[in-house]
Image (tube, rainbow, N blue to C red; front, side):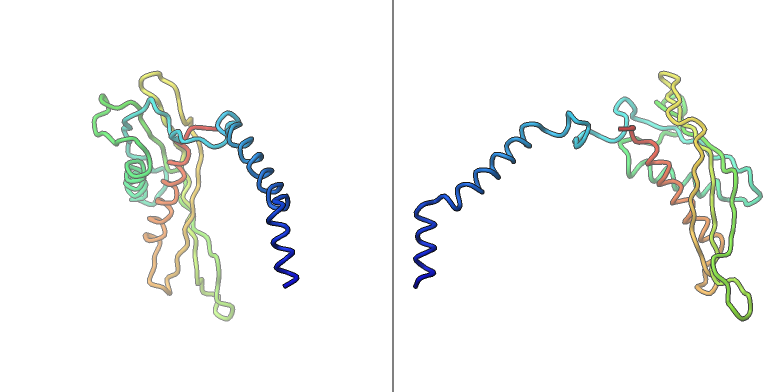
Length: 186
C-alpha cells in the first residue's frame, strides 16, 4: 500500500516523468532539424554517377597462360553491372556513354593447408589480379584509370572442387570489387 501511494504522488506531480521526456524531445528535435545530409553523412542519392546511363564492356585481355579467365571475369562483371548499378550494358560502342576495359595481369595459386603426415595439399587459393579502366566517352574523363584490383577464392580437391571452380569464384569477387569502384567517391 505504501508503494502504491508513492507512485500516485509521482504521477500526480508529473515532474518525475516530464523532465526526462521533454529533454529527449528537445534532443531529437535538435538532431532532426540539423540534418545529416549537409554534413556529407546520410543521403538518399544514388551511389553511382547520374550522368551515365550505358556502359560498353570490352572483353578483358588475359596476360596469363590460363585461358578462359577473361570470359569468366567479363561475364561476371556484365551481370553485376546490370544487377547492382543503374547502368545498362550495350553491345554497340557508339551508343555507350562509357567504356570499361582492362586486363588480367596475374592468376596465382598458393597452398593454404597441407596434410601433416603426407604433405599433400588439402586446400589451395587462387588470386586473380586485374587492371581496370573506365572512360566517359562524352567528356573523355577517365573515371577509373589503370586501377589494380585483386580477388581470391579457395578450393579443395577433397571436396570435388578444382581450379576452374575457384577461378570462377575469384572472377565474381573481382567483379564485385570493380562495381564498388564505380561508385561516386564521398
